[in-house]
Length: 185
Image 1 (cartoon, one colour):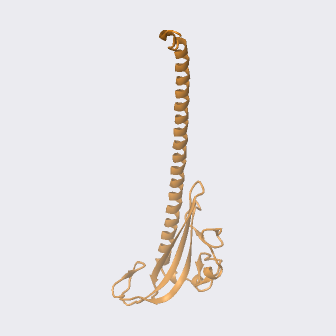
Image 2 (cartoon, helix red, strand yellow; image 1 turned 90 degrees about the horizontal axis):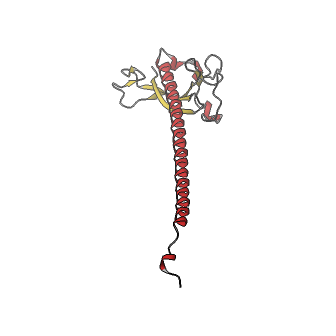
Image 3 (cartoon, helix red, strand yellow; image 1 turned 60 degrees about the horizontal axis):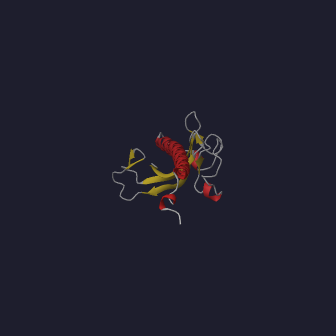
């Protein structure tokens, strides 16, 4: 039988275990650091993508605002393009039911000068307007304000669908659709 003092591991054995333990800990810390960098990079890219999507949404929303302003200026709401699709001088104006009967999908269509109008010089904003209804009666139209004009003496409106499309610098695209009414008299 060996004496108890020989049963303890030698100092040399302990140094070997310390080295292995240190290497394992170093590898664990390295893997954790690499994982943290990957998570940060993914979050950074997601945040950037969200910013581009927001820029595209803002561009589309601004395009619809431009269309609203165009409708309420002068007598554009009575433009002949809303009666018969001309495609020439007013490619962005569509009569009642025109887009629906042709199954136009605003999210997948090609937005160009043949079917919409560009806003500004960058070309990242476009809009189109479709007439949804003419001379629709207003309920209790005594003193409402429609399309920037008071309803006094006029109890009817034209109803329009305005669709705006915006594209960001990195190609994110958003489409905004609103329903807008303008006094018809």
